[in-house]
Length: 116
Image (cartoon, rainbow, N blue to C red; front, side, top):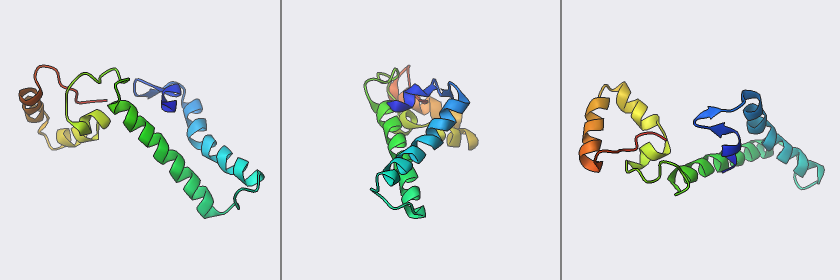
């Protein structure tokens, strides 16, 4: 839930703060481990550190959106729509959004969660 410190309602509260966290935190981890002689400073190590950081950040966001702590948790809907808006964007791009919404309302009822 660390991403909640930076993002609120799908917007960055402060772009500079968000950018510094997203770029600066993995860099600080790498420098800290390197200064303690825990790792050797190589390109593969830096790449792995960034990959792990972003993987865990993405995982925390997905877990939060599926958890009971999310404000839209009680609304039914497809799993992909609970995690990301990309599926709805794809459906809208195909021009089938109105049909998709109708199918969802038939399946889930009056209230359907189609966004995060």
